[in-house]
Length: 178
Image (tube, rainbow, N blue to C red):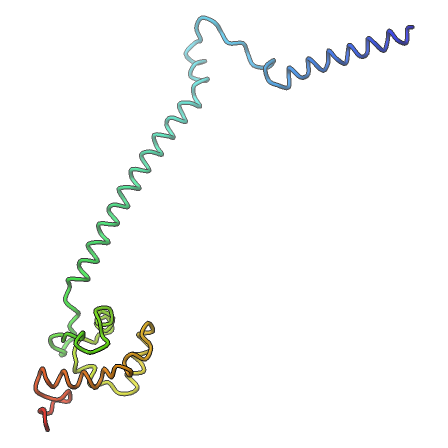
């Protein structure tokens, strides 16, 4: 009988220990009870500090988003200015070359190829008309998006004829027909 009584006491002790331990583990036993009637200002500030930091961070994030939007707008505006300048700017004139010719008159040369040729320093029919086979190969390699276009469309022959019709002389300087 004492044995049964000791077993019951042990089970009750274990049950009480379990209940007390589960209350402490959940955090409800360690939190101080809320004060009724008025916290002191430091206690309120300590309690609301994380909320104040979150509000400050949210305000800072909003300001950064506005700054980023402004920077993107400025970048887009400057990009458009550069595109406008490139589209409206005359092609670069090399010393001694003269006025640029409309290279788009050569069959196979469109606005994109004309711009690429201008960037490579080619602005006149005379320059193309004087290309040697080696130079044709070099420029063909410098225009990898259009392989074989120079020979296939016979740019050199066309440029000679266009130069002759525009200036009345061959690309070498001799009068046309001579």
